[in-house]
Length: 206
Image (tube, rainbow, N blue to C red; front, top):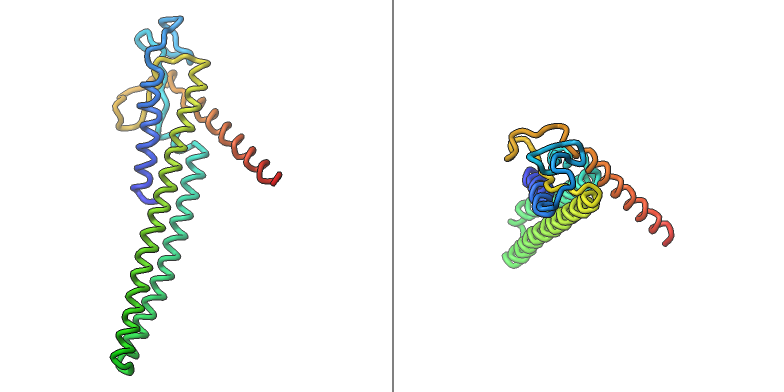
């Protein structure tokens, strides 16, 4: 997957854990003004954080999706290279025998080769667009998965803030005692594993 794809994933995940969490869980009253559910104290508010990079690196849904998209991109590149080499060979063959053709035959063959080239370009663009749309759907699914799980997680803990922490981000320091990354990861991966198991059972029954 290229750098642009990786950047898209980072942007989506950062938005999910840094912005959505902050907005969704702000303003809830705290029964104990000094204590956070995971043992942290931040200015009398129940605040924890998630390490964005670590979540991205270890979430099984993201890893599987990234691998799937990389494989499809690799297959598309190979297919386009094969079709491109085949067309190039046809062009070279035409150039070699062009002198033996009548003007009408040469024009007809040249037109056919140009049409093949146009078709190949159109196929490349359509395939790239389809792959981009699939990636966008996966990004949306990633966002929904995280949002859904955090909503469940917060019902049990009642945090006011769940911040997204990443190297070079807006948070310059984060107390390790407030880090709930592993708990979020465990929950997300458990749900993802359960979802895959349900899909496998459904497939077997068909």
